[in-house]
Length: 467
Image 1 (cartoon, helix red, strand yellow):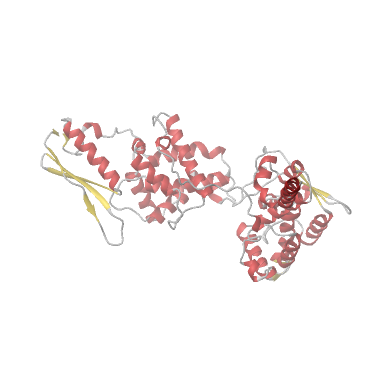
Image 2 (image 1 turned 45 degrees about the horizontal axis):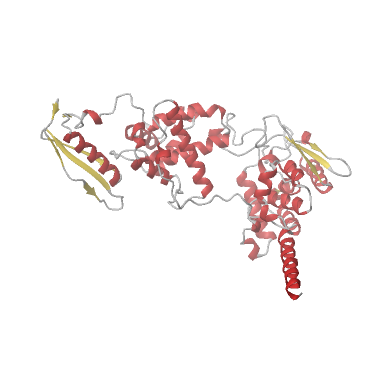
């Protein structure tokens, strides 16, 4: 039934102990009270304004839903949650495992914000786990769901906003803000924020492509003037000297319990040496096979880097393994990179192969069970080596704080040794412009040269005045 007997009341503020405020819009249609609750005042104001405008236009209100015809969503309207699943199904086959992980991370962050207030809302942590582990990865959707996970996803299906609602700035702005926060509510790193917002933008753009939205609502927002700058340069404080690296590598061999094949650190000594002396990325070193190594008895050797084994998680790889099996970063699937290695690394790798052997597929570095070495494993060994090999003040500093910083030290060494930038870029797997931008502050000598030129110019000016 329809009625024009409508009375719209003031917004009711609900303040419950230990919970955020909510806002309820109340109105009456043909003596039948109606209400709808929102998580923000802006959403409540917007909804109430729409009701009042419809009533002022003389629209009839449905006595069952309490809504005027202009505010009744078409039955076929797609919800944000349903569309996210559709987007993932489209992107998943062609995406790398790390990209899949990044995509689901961003969408699990923003999706809980794009909901209406509905009874039975689950804890955000449970909802995020439900999305990351059961709903978003396509293969995980068939898994048996614990009761709390199943209940959380049922609630999300009911509460998820219709896709057209995302054109409202009062909806889209809080979603963007949420993508800039950590799980603890602190500001996330600028690179993390940019990555997550990029995923969100691309999902909305896909909705535009399918003509489910007329435009991307993010484009309508004013850019905040206090956006943080994303830093790409390597922090010079993390770059260790050759002496410091040698001390750290020596400390690695003393880390871990001694087993049948030596300490865990001894098994990873050659791995860390590859990060420094060949400037390999950790994932590239993990993918290194015996057939990729030319290790002569004397002189320089050569690594043909072809594989990368980045850790992504079983839910995100096609093989169901923790580590993805991919080609090199920024290169074609079968493209390789040749890295000449000094006699020191040749000897280290020859000794490693002789002592520890290789995995069944020829990989140089493996766990005790033959698997790819986990990032948590080699990071823990590195942390212990830093505590053992550095003075206390240095151990508390950013110096060589991550295994990846060995690569930074290696590339910096090559640049400061005078190796031309194009050759360094080729060996490290960078473009020249990226190389110089990233390592600009790690090249020694420029400051002294500039100072000398300025000093000479000042001296020439003084001579001119004296004359």
